[in-house]
Image (spheres, rainbow, N blue to C red):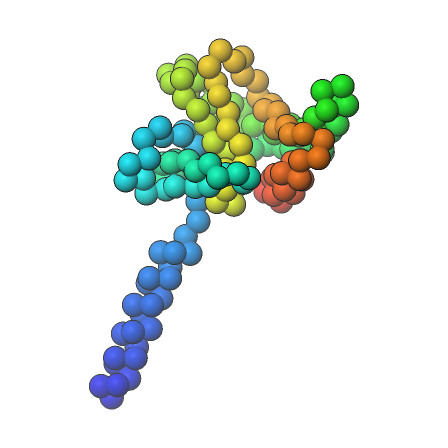
Length: 152
C-alpha cells in the first residue's frame, strides 16, 4: 500500500513537471523586450542564432489573423512573399500600439518560433502585413503553411 502511494505521488510529480515543459507560446505578434535579463519567455528565430525575449501573451493573437494570401513571386526584387491580413480589431490594436509605442519592435511568433520581426518606426501601417524572403527562402513556405492551418 505504501509503495503504491509513493508510485502514485511520483507519477503526479512527473506529470506536473512535464506539463510545465509542454506549454507553448500562443502564436501572434509580441512586443520584443530589449532586456533579456531574467527573461521567462525566450524564443529563438526560425533561422539563425537570434533569440528574442517576449512577454507571456501576444498583443495581437493569431485569432486576429483574418487571412493569408498564397505565396507570390516578385521577380524584379527577387522576393517571395505572402500578405497576412489582420481583422479590423487586430488592425485597431496594431495602430494603437504604434501610436503609444512608436519605437516598439514586434515579433511574429508561430509555433514557438520567431518567424520574423516588424519594425514600426516611420512606417505607415495597413491592415495587410507583407512577409517576404528571398526567392530560395524555405522560411516563406514554413510560415505560409502554418498560417494557412490557423485560418481557412
